[in-house]
Image 1: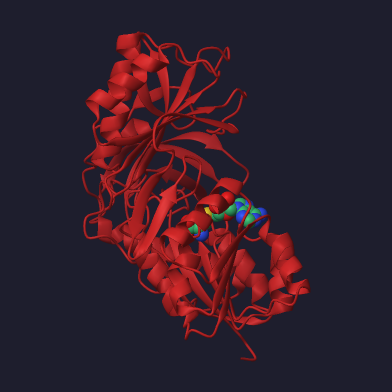
Image 2: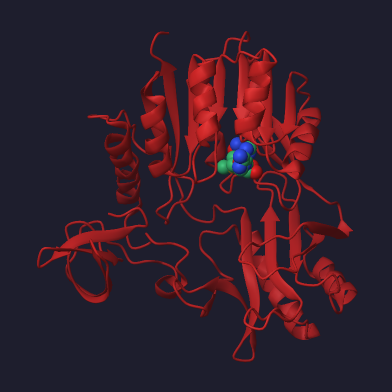
Length: 438
Ligand SMILES: C[S@@+](CC[C@H](N)C(=O)[O-])C[C@H]1O[C@@H](n2cnc3c(N)ncnc32)[C@H](O)[C@@H]1O
């Protein structure tokens, strides 16, 4: 299987990637693209079925492109993800037998997402909130999405209906006109609090007051309605300005003993059932005794740092997003943590500054975006050489490459994939790297 969940096979010795095909199957596929080293095929028919093939429950599975593995049994998905993590570790980090544990899965791998982030458009006279079909500008209505929490689906459906009733002006990408562009719905699984963010092209939003009034009437669970203004011609969701429309600005969420306050743009893990499992793996890997200085690099709203703080001497976190750091500071206060500090800035710069100021961390946790660690951070880690690095990654390929470099000084002891995104090919993992001369 490929990293996007495609089946990889051969057709007359030509390597061919076929989305929807599974290992061990024989399929009829139409070649739709030929690249230098491989072709891409569209699945027409399965001639010989894998035992792992299941009927995808979602009605728009073929069109949506959001999930890519609903046709594979959940157990097989978990095994495939373990393999997805193993492969780049042997390729880039030169490990003959990468120490990859079985993937930590969910008991019920549906309805797990706490946030929906969907464009709202007019399509053939209807208001549709959905995802663009892979490789096209055709929008598919996903308002009943099976991997979303039912509450985010409900908010999205209500906004869609109210926008239609009120004739709200909707954004048209082609001509860069219209007002409302994206609906972002977030729910706190533990607290039940709900946040709606309406992303608009303009500061003005016609019939804004009526829209807010109807939302509040129809969704009593809603606690926060915000407007984010994004005037740019861009595929990025959010702009720089966020205006409160109703209720509290942030919503509250709890993971274990830690309390979080979430502003609309702050990153927060999407799967609240799996997140504590991931953070417990980080805590196990860090092996804290209460004496350690811990750095939480790419800390977001402080989640991992605050999880570890009760067992550490002190925690130092940094993140490039100012709102996330503001949330992290508030979260520390709300959770009664007084041994953690959080600073705005690029991890690769801040860690070097802290080292110059004499900080010598025992454990560094890194949780970078999909692009992996910045080269300067890798060099700073090799220089400061903490005893342990705990690497949380959402991209096995950059994890493999970064471990290849860190391998100069570190042994990769244990890697545990965690299935944060069932039904998709994405996989998160927690890796423990221990200094070789330790
Ligand atoms: C995968 S998230 C991890 C957040 C957090 N550890 C968590 O578990 O919720 C990556 C974070 O890296 C931040 N980020 C991106 N580039 C960065 C950089 N160069 N330096 C510091 N933070 C960065 C983003 O703002 C985001 O919060």
